[in-house]
Length: 345
Length: 278
Image (cartoon, rainbow over all chains, first blue to last red; front, top):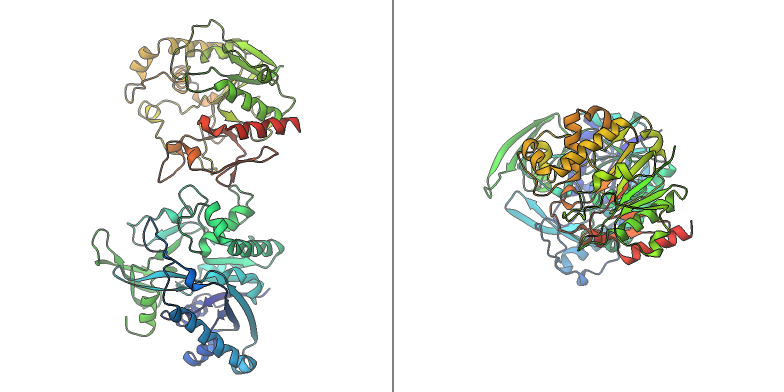
């Protein structure tokens, strides 16, 4: 059975997900010692920024994103809770031109790309982006940017993965121990996190318990293990159906925002597969997913020791120092990870 | 041994509990067509409703109960049941599947009250919003929404105590329920108090029993925003096979809907069609 980790990296015009994925992959090698596959829309850029990519990635999947949405139709959506999730339209040239530029460049190179990469496994897959979303990315509690949010490709993971047993992790999920290696020998076809811990200790987001106040349980798609089985195929087919009919599911599950989130889609698929009741067909990691929000700032990584500035409660723009050790953490402030990687943290 | 379901229903000024009892009887017939159902009431019953009940029993020793929640006559159910083994249901409930396996489980008890309730998402209810009097006065956490009894001297004695407490509720509540003293008498409190006085908690209830019911009082649903009437905020679907979904959750436990608004004409019609089609 081939076992390995799959990481997605679809860049937008401000966050270099490839850098994050390279960093995350290095830590996978260090702590889990497993093969890593990267799925990206910018493989040529990978070569450029990471000449040693063959030491880090064992498999490469090229994603060709086909935009099926009309950016002009998008209007700002008011969110009653906060402005964390939004569909605020950004200038057309900023998004579409970047996507087109990347795709064109890749297309030009595609006949020779496999040879250039000299990598054992190369798969090209087209993905129709139906939603074309933007969201607000915070960098600490004060600064923020509105950027394209390209996360829906994850629903294609069954098709994309080169492994029989796959552990998908977000590019901003920083591994600092080998605990996730237990997934390979457990019996569930699919595992996700349900329990989570906000490292601030003072924030409470009800949406990390249920996807909306009166709706179903929330599961994190940040870390997802699956084995290729008929059951798992149904799960991913269902995810695709949910994605294609997202507007319907937003209403049907009383979501507060129209923004597509993998977490929500995965939660809905789990609920449906569980027979519309509490059930345990889908496995749950026994521990909790630890996370810091993008309103917090990563300031240092020293092997398995991480340091953060955590947004203070009731003191806008002020922070508390937090240290962690041997803890896997979903670090939502991607800008701060990038700064650390570039040595400017 | 004769066994059956007993429903107590008396209309109030606002709520047609006879209609609710009819809907409950439909749901019992849908999933358990051979089971016997009796209605205890002092209201006039439509001919259409009568057909669903094996027995319609007048409330004995009628005292024209004027209490808000029609509590005063509930202790009489033990005395008027036509069965040797009885499961009592509140009228504002629906059966959502075949529960005949309950009888086997209840065989080992002479009297059983559930001490757990669940929300529509299948979570065990831990909120104590409506149970402050129980907690502050160390009462057993019993629910009388659904309960079971056999006819025998021990249980007769228990219901004699319930009668005494009910008829002198202000005296008993004043003595035993000093904190969070209830404004109205409550059957839940009456049976819990009788249970406490007779020290029966270990033998008339069990945690995590299979006698499960969903309690739809809004403060028990773990909501951030609690609505006055849950029906306004939740999607209700009852399919042609009478499978009930609340906000995309199938309901497999006894469903205590509480709000009369839930029982729309559409729901009632679906239940009628469901029974007609078997």
